[in-house]
Length: 132
Image 1: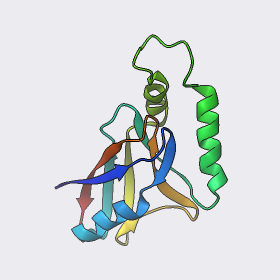
Image 2: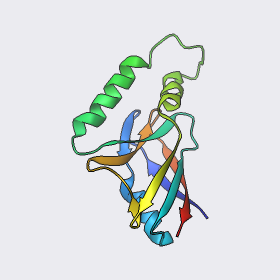
Image 3: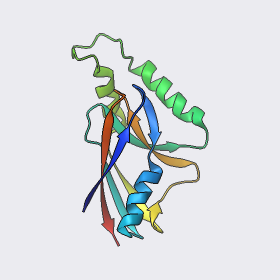
């Protein structure tokens, strides 16, 4: 079965912790062990796993990403969001994560981030769970 979570971003560029939302979907499916496939169906957003213990990590990721791919560079795409498309491609639109004991399996400091690069917008993440 395909599941979907809704995300409402509040800024043009931000990382949003969606770990609890995805674990909620896993709980509803009563899946104890398996694989969680996650897909972002947007060309200006992405998904990643990284540290959540220190908010400076998310800040640094966004700052460095912005310096590597600035919003005001000389892009051919005239819509004004080429930087968001590039950032999405660099980070990626899909992940496969392990479900263990009914939850996403992470290291001590990790969480799941939705990466907004062209907000604020209403977004979705599709979730497919395999297991039992």
